[in-house]
Length: 404
Image (cartoon, rainbow, N blue to C red):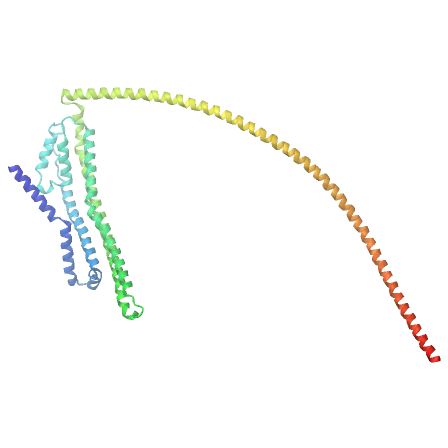
């Protein structure tokens, strides 16, 4: 009955703690406080009214921003607690050869203040203390520590899910405001009453640009703030992992050297025998594989040599045949060229003879032209004589008429 009451009280207290640290509630509280403080700002009051109070999307963007900042605020506060938990000397004066090392470590962890019980370092050491058993080796403890480190890194990544969602949603709201503002501006455009609708168009465009500028600015602040806080938390996780390896894993060396019970000795002997047999089997198998690979390699080399020789013979034969065919074609081509050259010489001689004949024909043509000119002149002379004869006859007839 008391155990059930303690469990119930622990669950109720954890529920109250979760509610008291809820980023949804604290984001709403920060948003209300911010808007209540705007009228009392000594400077930039008009700027705050324009960018935070002009459209309902600006209220939603501001609320999401404060939700993300609330998550980062509680994480930043937890960083201080985590650093304080790292300063506890829980391994001081603990005999590393003691078989009750895990129980002693668990007892010291339980004696720490309650506010540090859920810190990463104390939680990690509590998990390690619950895992430790007599006769465990350093390798198993290191493997368990690495498992715990991976799980802590996954939890750290999951803890930023809300921040990543808010960082993604804030610019989307800004782009939504851009679309709404441009739609308002286009809806109020009137060509008939351009001057009256100009103020409404400008108002829609101002909503578009203001919501986008606000969303992008707040998302930048969230991105840089989350980067800084996450970097601090990753450094603390690295320190926790280093302390676990240094203070717990290295203490297993002395107990690993000499087993404390015959059962452990028998287990170690069996493990050593199994390892030796496995090593022998692996060596034998590797030897067989190497021999098989050597035989395969030799077969490949021989086949490659044979294929190479066959390829060389085939290439040589084909080249010889090709060269022979080219030589025969060249011979025929040379013969044809010589024949054509002889024909060209004959044609050249004929052309020379034709040129000589053309010269003689030209001289004959000149003589004929001269003869034609002489004939033409004689014909003209005859015409003149006929004309003179006609004139003489005419004069004779006229003189006879006068005598009569």
